[in-house]
Image (cartoon, rainbow, N blue to C red; front, side):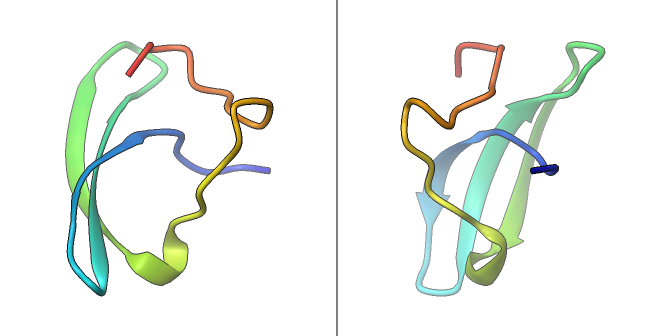
Length: 51
């Protein structure tokens, strides 16, 4: 699975506000359409930033 692994920090019915760190360690914050967001289990989580 490819994509961004981040943490939802806010949401509406149609969008989620996601924070994540890219591979260089740069922090990002952005809106994603809810159809693009998948909730993952702890076993599926591949984030390394500790967010």
